[in-house]
Image (tube, rainbow, N blue to C red; front, side, top):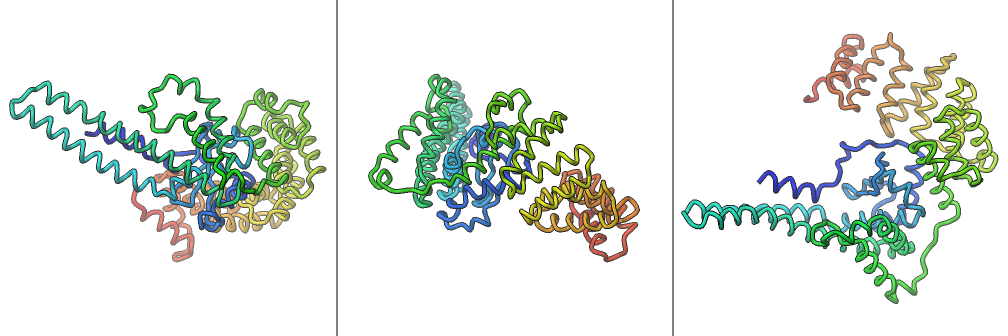
Length: 435
């Protein structure tokens, strides 16, 4: 029975948010948020409630949890070339949410488990009653297959419904549903050589070729074919291109960056990818030239100043790095990642007032979007002689799921902090948490 449960769980459970490696990047998250905002509005969800998480994984994948948390894999972002195609993927995932598919799948799984138990009971009964032992064994062996095939069929049906609901959501949002065509064409190119050798009844998704045909038929319907849809602005297309270039620059090898963005390509996205790759590879002069070229073209882009701050920090030019980060924050207030980077540089520069400013920045980040790095930087800003640094490190290790280290620092903090101070109480809370 354990084996059957494991098979069913593998079919329905999305990747847990606690099991993935997430990338915190203000630029990527904000651009994706902007792209999917029309879908949220069309689904009667406030766009501000849609939280975007970027999963550091090369899979061509995305999923939605709790109706408002959208997880998008870097492998999807680097492969999907247009904002509208990305929107179609998210619309499909929201289709699962709108259709209540996870709840339905759980109910179906429970029903199949009960049916499997009954079938197994029948098999055991036949054997115990002295009937045909081979028949009883056959019934037992078939129970797992019956459950698996039933759940696979259920999953395929839900994928078809999610395609339809996602397409309807795109239409309701007045965004061109042709994004679905772009996605399925790309997926078909990636999987057709494999799917041609697969039994359609043995997988939990319909064949991509089938999904592509179904979408084409839907798009040919007069109520969709004759409807006028919004198109993405040049600015949105450019911002999405920069996001994709940024991911390639940071995550891919220098050779792949050069292949995707050769020096003959003078676009902003290509220069961005190469500047980031140069910084990663230690070619700071090349990175600086590329970044300053981009700033001369787009002087109001905060993320270019963020990159400039990163490069100047790598040089050890702390004053220039601080200036760049401060300018980025002026252009884009409430940017947790940039604020944390600035705080870190301030703790390194350590001029008069720098640590107070770093503490202020870290506290602001922790209130809005706490990260382990923000707590680590806060501890650095407090300094080793301050008990609040021990509390900050306890919070850092708590977020890193290192409970023993968190408790160690929380205990140390309590011995050095004034009783009933906020940090003392928070340290006590950490100690009271169950291991």
